[in-house]
Image (tube, rainbow, N blue to C red; front, side):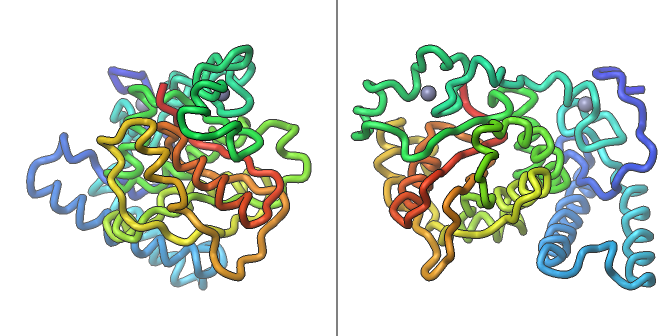
Length: 296
Ligand SMILES: [Zn+2]
Ligand SMILES: [Zn+2]
């Protein structure tokens, strides 16, 4: 049993996690990193091939043997408390800073904005030269605080890509029933080519695929991959200006009438605004946005 969260080692888990570098000796760090990238590239290719369960029996057995071997070397650990067993243990999953859907702003997803929103009111929108958000609604599952930060960090920076499925499971209930009616597909804000190369996978795409599966909808790529742009030191207004026009739809793409756009973290909303602008310009009538976390 783990000291922090009391989690027991769960049987039957999916093996193959990258161990947290901060807790591993130097030699093992290099091993974890090497394995992480190998695994990512292999799994990234899997998304475009047949499902693993449809692979020939010897291939599946070889993969299971490999995963069991890797699990022995680098046991799966909780992204938040580091307890062995699952990528996100039960207590940590329960203690994430979930946003209360009933108190959140239905338009931009800000926590506590249901009655009067401090994030998408007329003054804030005017500051970014708008009268309304370019989407019909937005929601996030958790506030971007300690637990959520660790989950996103383990996913994006430590390459624990199995968290995509976990995050998708937590996000899907935040799709409002009103959005669900008529919703035709799920898409994602693509990562830059540099980020994809660095991680070995497109982080938003994996989450979107999981959300689409939860909702029983297709996941489609509709945006061209944006060029790299570091927004970390920009103010809210600068981010809005910087992102404006940076996303565009794929030429010749057949777009649905109603689309859910998925991303990992909403910081100022500038990326979602850019996505909404591009989709509205391309003729999508109803755009909804869903992120795992939201800064608050
Ligand atoms: Zn935990
Ligand atoms: Zn709002």
